[in-house]
Length: 122
Image 1 (cartoon, one colour):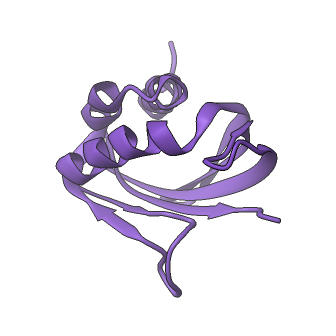
Image 2 (cartoon, rainbow, N blue to C red):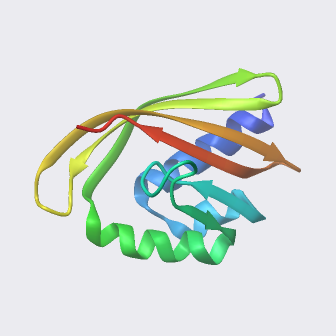
């Protein structure tokens, strides 16, 4: 029987690949925080809560076309989880991209409470 954390991240990953904001929101806590790789130092742009998450995906679908996540793996590190991934797609300027990234996660009460993202860029 699959572990509940594995199941959570499987659902989250599938929803993320489809940019399904409603299903992504179902996988996170009400006070979810996402520290994006982009934005000012030291934290990057920070999204808080499900409503900001949903707005981000509405905007993001216009900025990145054909974004596809692959090679995703979850690694447990004590009470934290590390997610490694590869993302390919087309950026807002029409240029193809291919990048590797890592996310630091915290899970609380069976849902994702924090996603802190780091991404290789040119």
